[in-house]
Image 1 (tube, rainbow, N blue to C red):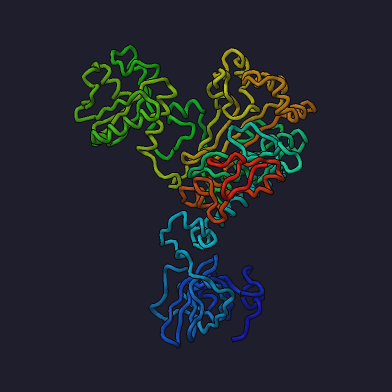
Image 2: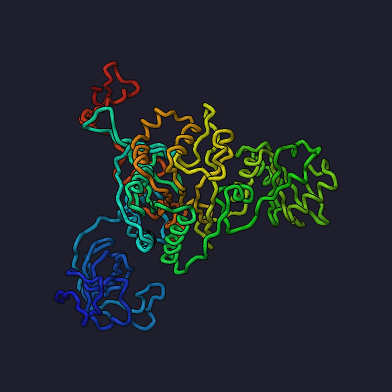
Length: 606
């Protein structure tokens, strides 16, 4: 059969998939194409031969699979790359496949041209087959052929496109910022890039474009955004990689309300593009309320189980276990059936999280309490516990007494472990958390530590507390949370030199150190800095939730393992002595090396 030219509007509806090598994508063929001659390109997903005179080839490309019928044998095996030319026809009666989008049709009288042969694949390119993750990552180029990952990457593109459109529509200008940069105070380790031209010096890869985007505000850009690549040398987990991507935003002459509005518009646009439904307006909680009610600043609002304050109930109690600044409780509906071993496990978990212990009460018929502590309670305390918690027969009440923050965070973690669900399960519940503390605890020298970064503007009502009670100062910082995952954070920035100096002083940063680390930024501010604020949305996390994935690795084309390795390329790999020498680096002498630093398989130090 002769080659088929690319289609025209008259011959094939002007399909956008047409190229000089193919007329259609495999997954777009349907009953409307019956009788049309087509040329398809893709991978052999499956080959079935019926003697010497008939063969079936399931041909796959990114759009899907279509069955091709060949009058004869086929030389191509699984994962061969082929071009198939034939005529679309209806499948014979009784052979339609409802599980395929193209299941009502097939391509008949096919000629198959092998474009590239293939070795047997390391695993089946099929979402129904479970494959060890290490094997998948070692052969990622095969893994990415699977429909699930194809769909994930295309969903990611849809989300990024919607975010970009939303920012463009709101008057933001996309600007690229440097990847080779100076250290930034983001609170995580940075990747260092040694300089070849300046031995002993180097750059860092940016944890975020924080300082660069603030300088763009000083430059008068007014509204900036970027789909930014960021890098942090921190331990990896399901929602964290060395490399990540965020929608980075900054705007001038705005306040917190403006930024929450800009970002909400973009995120809701992305959600609508990904799911087909636009979420309702995003509610908000103060940080203090989130901690008090949910025990975390990343609350999952898909289920209740809010924490209850029992401090008043046990004020002046004779029960030593409850003699603490705060007594908090969590009600597990139907939890009274928990076995003693289960309750002991919860108690051990509470201790692991920092609590001195965990009190538990199983609520029985007639509102009786089954607990080792019940005999120490007075009638008013029993009644107060049931009234405050609203617990009914069959429920389990868990109680932690300690400092308020610790009692809340321990029960908040137990709340998630007992009643939570996978992050990607619906419904999608967004929440803004606002009014974070400006500082979060003290360092070894007794200085407050910045909760976000030292350029966050204090709450205007708390400025007078900076010197006399810094840990009580609220900030104009805010986080966006979805189903218990932090999607991103931002703040109103300090643009006034006097406020910045006071924050640096509170942090224990001397004037000389501030000049050395941030002199370029402070100097820029002295040229006239507008009030400005910003935010960053974690695109990997957002897409993972929409895709129904528990790990962001499944929505990143080439992720690292949990140990930070790239199994496909072998990175990180040792640098050759010549490369180290050019960078002015001296190899560390391996253990067991001789006095000259040499050891088998390595070069001697310079």
